Amino acid sequence: MMSGRFETWIGSRYVRSRSRNSFISLISAISMLGIAIAVLVLIVVMSVVNGFERELKDRLLAMTAHANVEDVEGRLADYDALRATALDNPRVEAAAPYIDGQALLVAGKALSGAELRGIEPGLEETVSGIGRVMQVGALDDLVDGQFNIVLGVELADTLEVGVGDKVTVTLADGMVTPAGVIPRTKRFTVSGIYRVGMYEFDRRLAFISLEDAQRLYRMRGYVNGVRLSVSEIYAAPDIVREVAHAHGSILLVSDWTRVHVNFFRSIQITKSILFVILLMVVAVAAFNIVSTLVMVVKDKQADIAILRTVGAKPSSVLGIFVTQGTIVGVVGTLAGVLLGVLAALNLEGIVAFFEATFGIKFLAADVYFISDLPSELQLGDVVRIAAIALALALVSTLYPAWVAARTAPAEALRYD
Image (cartoon, rainbow, N blue to C red; front, side, top):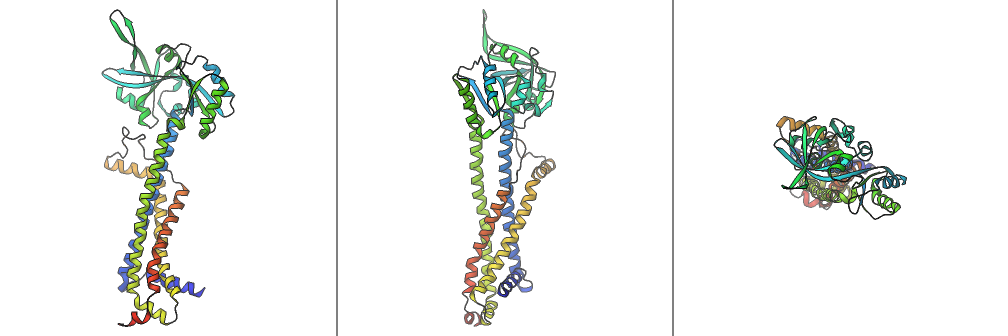
């Protein structure tokens, strides 16, 4: 017990050394700072990757259903029966028919290709979150026969239109006339604008009422399929198959894990690669302790020899330098964890401050899937990072401490 306190006291004194040993104390402080910065960076980066994964999943599922059931030919007639079959499944929360098609939107001299989705507003809000991201207008304004259209904010900016303006929808499927084949067109009135925060949707997707879509695409009485909202999103593949089997006819099924699987796989791979790379930074910072302790051992040769001559065991000398290195590692790791947690929890505010101050944009909406820098701090990541940093710091103390324990008193005091 006394021996342990003795080793700890001397080891901590070496960390706080002053006067002629101030340089060694400075090196110890630099080692602590290196570990703290490495841990801080690793926590922040992992939090950003977690935030990207969360935002990507939330925003994708806000605009795409958990699962889709479609007709093989793309013309589903008994969609009310299919919807009823789906709702009979206890794990299906909602179902809504839809029509998807491509079109060219023209407003004045501006034009843009877009995906048109015909929906029933009341049912659509039960399977997606489009109603919650409306900035202007409401989804209920898509009344059958009025030919209203809801645009994403980026698409509206491209067309330079707002609520109340007219947009001409042009289809590639033309009409045969004596003058030749001419494209079919229909004028729509912009009744709403939404912003989901993902450029892919805000720039490419527009909504119209289901009946208007049936008229536009000549699909009266038909839809492309039925979108499902399920209670267990990770069980969506099994649930959508159950619905298709229960209906009895040949159907095409898809779910969010298939449609967007590459996104989530790439995020997981990126997270693993970043963790390994940044862990090397932590390792470099931790191994700075080796150089620090080697310098301390060289500087303290006489002290070590005196301790040995008064009866200190090699294990005690070993414990002194392990204690010193451990203190450096623990203090550096705790400082890094504290700063990393604070930075991760306030990252969005910090990024917004720098963007406003320097007039820059970290994430360009037309390049990345989302335009905001998200952050999600996970306790498991913090614990894993702190544990690895402490382990590396402890390993770094072993060689210098072993060298100190092997110091021969007579050899060290020969020239003193």
